[in-house]
Length: 70
Image 1 (cartoon, rainbow, N blue to C red):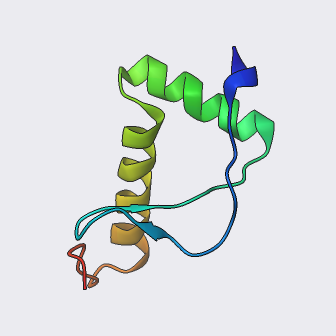
Image 2: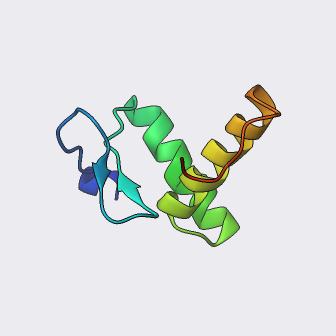
């Protein structure tokens, strides 16, 4: 089940368009499996869960930061 985790190259975010950028993320296998389990439990994709986690971390760590693209 978890053997399908694919890790692409590293580097700068790859801009897909004005609103989205693709980023690679290296995680320990246990954390990747945990993300998959949580996403399934919440009924969302891992990408949706990651976007929520990043947005929450930005809001908590930099309360005055705008979430709008620069």
